[in-house]
Image 1 (cartoon, one colour):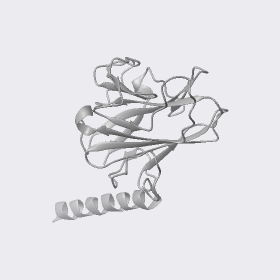
Image 2 (tube, helix red, strand yellow):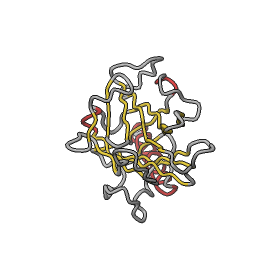
Image 3 (cartoon, rainbow, N blue to C red):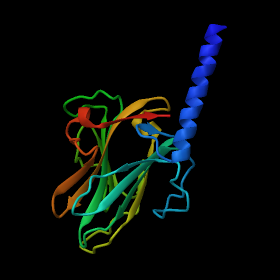
Length: 209
């Protein structure tokens, strides 16, 4: 009887926690399951209201937030910018420690994702551009910057990464670092603000609910 009461209380507490997260639309350190998105780079009404939200530190270039949730098959990520500095490219990147090893250097379970004119990713190291494409890509981001020197100001990027690619599932904990590469200034903004893109142990720990 005591065990049954304990299990019931645990279930009630979990239900309350999830309900609170959904009500606030922000649940730090958790990736909540949410509704699917219209994958077009346009923010529909209430499309991202059920996502966790993280805000980049105040800086001279732009105000930026990143939203994350999942649909039980894909990680869904939104980079949202405003007050951008003109003629500057802000390239979304993020790094995932899929086994949460919290190592001091990159290992074979760490993934790099990059959005610019093409969508690029690599496993085990950053800035390997051998897997870049906007067609037939196993993961996807929209929109992309145009090729060449034509500047295009983009305020929002929608990104989808399959669980299968990452070999992750609900209930799992991962490490993640959200990043914005700033070109041509060759600077970088990271969230968490004190994280380092080359040191996975400094990345944010998230639980996939």
